[in-house]
Length: 434
Image 1 (cartoon, one colour):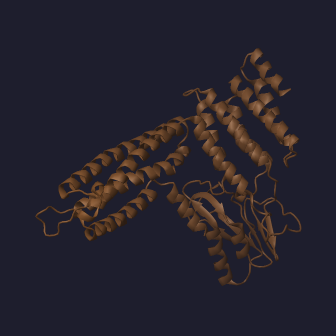
Image 2: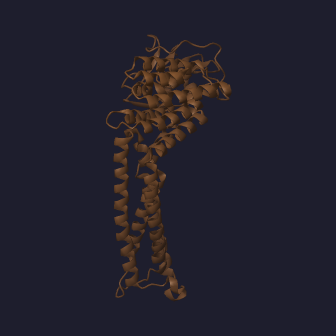
């Protein structure tokens, strides 16, 4: 199941899968429509559906050639969007455009219409051919598909232009991240109905396994995309403890431990089965995904803010926009209970890494505060956002402690005092902090 999810997620972020599916449907439609045309005589059809062989060939050829031009234009626009997004926002935002279903469906419909028209055109015979038939219904379907494709292309161009706005990019990433937080998959350890808290909390996961532990090592480098705690718990032998030292979103080098088991059972066959199940439960891939990785959503937004604050772009308004969206994500994270990364059931224990509220605050704003240390207007928005989040934590009585925000505010105050800002600019920011 974990592997299937990974394959489906990867296919959804490629430009090939959905257009290929549309083309397969177009082949079936072409075969069916040609068969219907051979069964139905022209005289039995309404006048609006009647056509001649020459007329049908001309219409089908025109549709195919025109949509090939539209297809070329659409792909050019997608490539331009990808290039602009990579340079203006971040290379990590490319999945937004390549995985955009509106663009994928537009490309798929245009390709499907071309395929349908060419297949029917191939079957349309000249009048002196013994196998002559008039493609009445097929031509009508091709016209409908062509008109629909043109409307969809126009819609996709409008959508592409709108999606290039920084507000649209930030909102999309924020919504993806919030949906992941609300599903709870990124922080799931003790909330599963079949899992009960361990009798006592184990110490922090060590960096290296003990010498007497059984180690399951990675076979290739990559990002930890998902961890199926249920599957790891099921694979754990009774009376044993499995420790997972790699958090979701971490980069795993080849041959490093992805899990270790202690105490080690004497059954070699059981250990081989355990290794196979753990490798299936911990997905390691070449790219980060949003299946369970909240940090990836945060990183994408932070990348945009850092690039906006760089001397090459110097776009503080974009940074301020992104900071507001990061504040929304942080507020959602601070509304989640901190859970120790321990699952325990029937004498089996799994220990994994769970991020704390303090680490999420740092992930959202540490790099941004450093980059904005010489930009007072961005610092002001950062302080206001943090104060708003802090006030909401207190007002809503969220699980997080306000002190995790206070610590960052104190660091910002220290940065301001050490910065090269004028006395007036420093005073403006410090007044907000009071």
